[in-house]
Image (cartoon, rainbow, N blue to C red; front, top):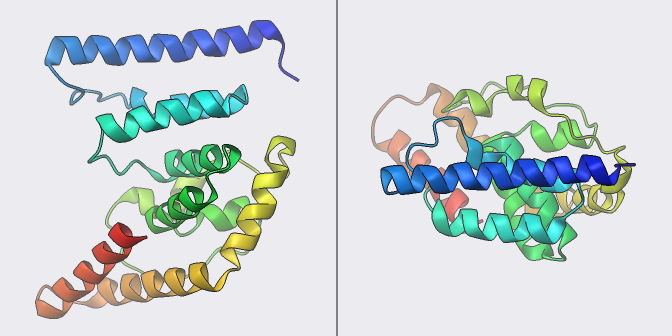
Length: 197
């Protein structure tokens, strides 16, 4: 259980991050110089203090402000939790898909399922299993009981399984496919999945 003093410290940290982002914008004329990745930190802090509405407000701002920023797997997972906790289950499904696309291991790690062992193309180190070293969320977290039940059911749904299988199939083919028309078509199929789901 968090004390009021601990919660106050976290809220102060959120305020400080927002001020630093605003100062960057004022100095540079935009948010293009957030090399420290400050913009990714608030969702985890909002989750710590169970301020799901505040987290959603922040993420709506993030979505408008960093429209081209696809985020990274743990950040997308936190976004999924916040959407779910605000009753936005359709949006949470879409964000769970994006989380899976960004790292196929994260959802299984959270749900304590056996991790997939496949040779696939990975466009960045965020797509590899090594990111799990920094992933601290667990299905046994009491605050996430409802989210865990929902996520377990969603990941067993026909829609998610078909989507996941198609994504993995493309990633496996991309591992070996040389540059050329077939690879281009596979990449376009993958981007379409990312865009449409």
